[in-house]
Image (tube, rainbow, N blue to C red; front, side):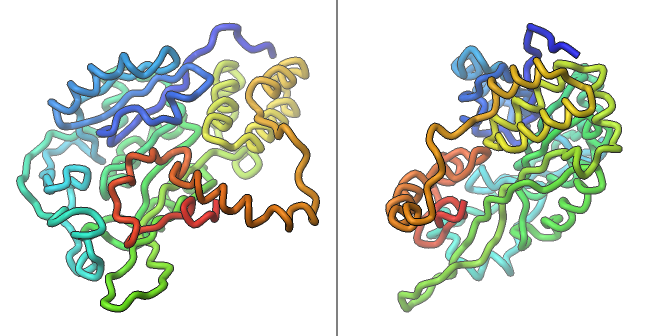
Length: 343
C-alpha cells in the first residue's frame, strides 16, 4: 500500500487547555490540529486570538465547552489559583500535610467562587462539531479526567494515544485515582508507556533530606499492536493510509522512536505498508543516534558528567509537560522524575 503525498494533520484534543498549545506540538515536524477546551469564555477568546502565533505547522481552535460523562449542569469551584479550579472540592486532610502556601501560593486551594456550567460528553461534542478523526487526547482537568474519558467512550475507539494527569493520592475529595484511570484505559485497549512522577515534600522545622511523597504524574498511553493486535483499531488502519503515517509521526513527536520503528515493522509484516514506504517513513520519523553508544569503560568515565548535563536540562520536565506548567512550584518542596535525573 502506498501512502498519500498530502499530509492529514495529527488531531489532538486538549482538554484543559488554559496554557495554550504545548511546545511539543509547536516543535513537531508534522502538521498538527489542536482542538482545545477552555470553559472560561474570556480565556477561550484569548487562546483563539493567540492561535495564529503557533507557527505554520500548528492550527488551534478553542471551544468554551465543559466536558463531563453526561449532559448535566455541574458546579465548577474557582480556586484562588485558577489553575487548580475543579468540579471537586479540595481534600483538606491531604493538603494539610504539605506546605501548600510555600509549594504553590498562599491559600491556593481556597474557593473564591462557584459557577454552574452546562456540560456535555465528548462523544456528543465530536458528533455536534463533526470531529470525525481524533488521534491523541490530552487531559488535565483537576480530577474529572476519568469522567471525561467515559463520556468519550466511542471517540476513544479511534484514538491512538492519551496523555492524562493522574493522582496517586486524592488532592480533591472523592476524585478518581491512577488505578481507576489505568483500569479504564486498559479496558479500552491502551497500554501505559510512560510516567513522569511528581513528589511533594512535607515541611519540617529541621533541615532534612527527603525523597518526598509521589502525589501525581503525567501518564502517557498508546495502543500497542503487540498487546492488542485483535483490536478493531488496527483493522481500521487498512482503509486509512494517512492514519498509518500519523501514528508513526505521533510516536516520534512524543519521543518514542523505538516504538515508531516497532509500529513500522508491524505495518510492514501485516502488509499495511510496502518495503518502500517502510524505508521512507523510517528515514523521516525515526530519530537515530549521531554517534555510537559509549563502551562500558567510557560510560563509567563520563557517567558523572552526563548526569550533570541531564540535571542541567531536566527543567524540560517531559515532552508532554511544558516547563511553564510547573515552573511556579517551590523547588524546596517539589520534585519530579526529570529533575531527579531518573528519565
